[in-house]
Image (tube, rainbow, N blue to C red; front, side, top):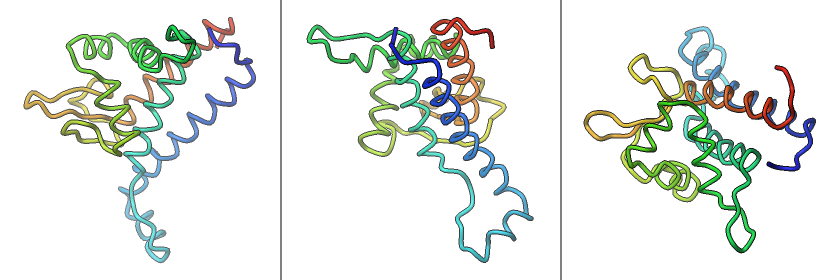
Length: 172
């Protein structure tokens, strides 16, 4: 486990939650006529930053994995993909099952968004929950991938809360 202090973790978690929650709220507000009318004079694009939010969530997943598991290579450097994958599995059974199905989530999604600003496979990124998508990341029957920011965010928050309990022995 990491040597990060609890106060620093709490600050980071608060930032993560405020950052992503703001984008989700902007996406919902953008669907309302009152909001559209209010921002029109300022030429502000509607919606939330779906790609940036997805990128942030995937980066925060790696952050959580490093804190909780701190996997290292033989040379002592961080083993980023192992840290990511282990914490990704902590998001819930559906996530673990999705990764176990053979999808290289770290490469396709995390590395794709970080290095190419798009997933390395055909993918739709949604801000708001979708009733037909029970987890925040997955694949459609047709083979197209999806990422649902709001759903992934809710699952990541639960995993971060559990990490906080495990690492800092705090009752939430």
